[in-house]
Image (cartoon, rainbow, N blue to C red; front, side, top):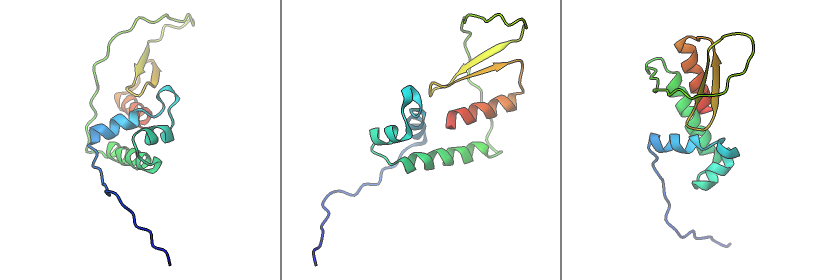
Length: 119
């Protein structure tokens, strides 16, 4: 009967929430998949999915308050569509862009931003 001896240091890394969010934000940027990002950081895909689900659960809890970030106006070419509705483009840290027309409720907008950031 052959025995296998594993040599090396077993490591259990601790990741602060800020670092987890930075790593999760890389998914989807320039076409990076979950596998690409996990491989780049020496993680498994399951780690990223667990982190994502953990943050989703925390964000959906009612005790967390919603905080908005300051926005800057960007001069973008307007499309002549015949109606004079306001359009807002929100570019997230992960590179995704949300376009909103009209004046949605803050709760709805906050929910859409949370979903886009964690998707």
